[in-house]
Amino acid sequence: MLKKVLIVVGIVIGVIIILLLAFAARTLWFAGEFKSVQPHSDYQGVQVKCAGPEDVDIDVEDQVAFISSSDRRAAMKGTPTQGAIYGYSLTTDKPVPVDLTQDFPRTFHPHGISLYTSPSGEHYLYVINMAGDNPFADTISGSTVELFKYEGGKLKHLETLGDSLIVSPNDILGVGPRQFYFSNDSGATDRMGKMMELYFQLPISNVVYYDGSTFRKAAENIACANGFAMSHDGKRLYVTSTVGKLIRVYDRDPATGALKMVKDVDVDTGVDNINMDSDGDIWAGCIPKLLSYDMNRRDPSKLAPSQVLMIRPLPNDMFEIKEVYYNAGEQVGGSSSAAAYKNRLFIGAAYDDKFLDLTHK
Image (tube, rainbow, N blue to C red):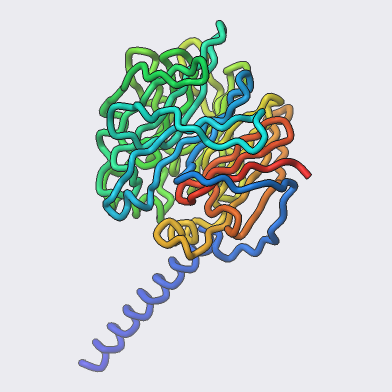
């Protein structure tokens, strides 16, 4: 009898081990850890020192790049430092980042940013101010949206917006002087829940819309909702799903902000922040190896690859996808954003201490 019990127990343990190994293999495969891609680039340029340059947005009219900066590794160690929005001239020879928010009166940990230019030419910058600046903390409740006006080469803070729907904010998209979307990259509110959500690719994050007076959910059932881009006519919205490795396309009602899903575009990589250029092409900063990225954010000596895709919307809801940059992490580790201006490409990285200013070869 005892022998039979031991045999059954052995079989059960064996099955559990096989299932665990299968899950580990699937996780490694899905995270891109088995990918073998040769580094290449259509661009060459310089590294620019900047702590945690998570997001980049381009002001085409004033010819300046805005960079959101915060030392996330310091925050993870329990010694957070004040972050900043930097202005980076697109016309100056050998420009240096200039702190445009050094007079901000409160704790500032900028994450996603978005420039909105009104029909009358006024420039507004929306900023996710992440409480604690650590997306893997037990809670990041208290995060806010900060609204600035850019004028005369300076950022003037206009207001702070908060709401219970700001659960785990990541990126933001300004669509009016006081209207915007933002992404909650997680539906969970605790560390264990966040890890389960990521490792099982659970589609429980969302997009929230603020119409100038009220916050409301505009899109749900997304696996790690992250970056935004919008067509120039305001009728198409693109939302990245980082662990879903896709871009979700929505029809948008400019009058109400309502979204209707059109399709998913499979990009087979951990797509993060995206930006649309003047020609309507989408530039995506991507994390091709998600587990390597997780190790890199904890230990900068462990490299995380960086990747940039150029995604061109075509007729009949088709898309042309071209990889224009891939690096093992020596130049910049774990790219979180990409923005193009004329023949230049800017690549940011949330946990690195620099961004790239590149020019097409």
